Image (tube, rainbow, N blue to C red):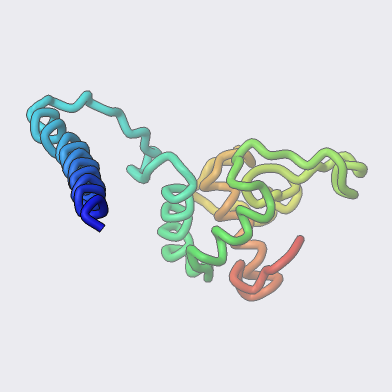
Length: 159
């Protein structure tokens, strides 16, 4: 039995040593973070749309919603986002070259996969006439969906 006591002490010492090392390792990032916070971060440029929204899917949807509000076109952020992700995965340059519209020579284009005749018929004044322009594409598609389905929020599949 006397031999067991030194063994426990040795195991306890090893456990404390490992725990202490872990605490020191955990403290290192905090020490480094303090020193790093004094450094000046590099300047980053954020791209924006001409209207001042971020030049990304979030900004395009928000800019479209602002235009839609002015023109009394119904729709919500979630309804637009859901349909954009289903139709183009958020790629404003998406083009469908395999469906029946493409076979007829009028492929679906842009974020909400609009064909040229629909885009032209439902184009919203104040937006670009370029079907690949994200804001123009979203706004025209939402205008079409409002007339056909009551709102883009009511669209849950190809439209």
